Image (cartoon, rainbow, N blue to C red; front, side):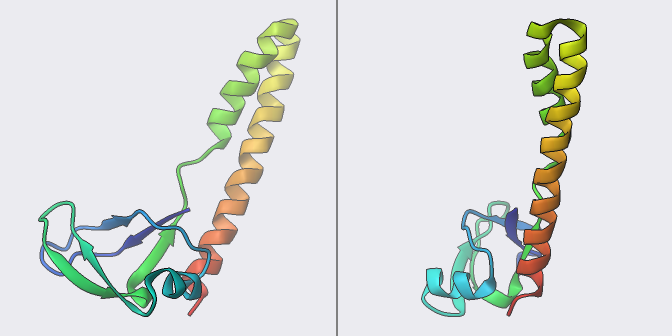
Length: 111
């Protein structure tokens, strides 16, 4: 899960945040309140934002990477091992994606 501000107050570009939290309450604790300063990486302007302006989105999908990794590991077991490894790796990656989607929904619905 990645956190971001939807838009910079000056240039309107999305601002990725290098902070972790599963709810907006956790962010308030990390920032010691509702307000925090953030510098836009695009226009370099520093503005004050509210924790309620922070949104979450999923990281890139891990299922294809898990399938590739499983397939490579499975190559040690021959063609059948590669197929089985890819299936297992893709399943593990898919489960990870599902958990990430759940965390994003929880964060975005928190207050």
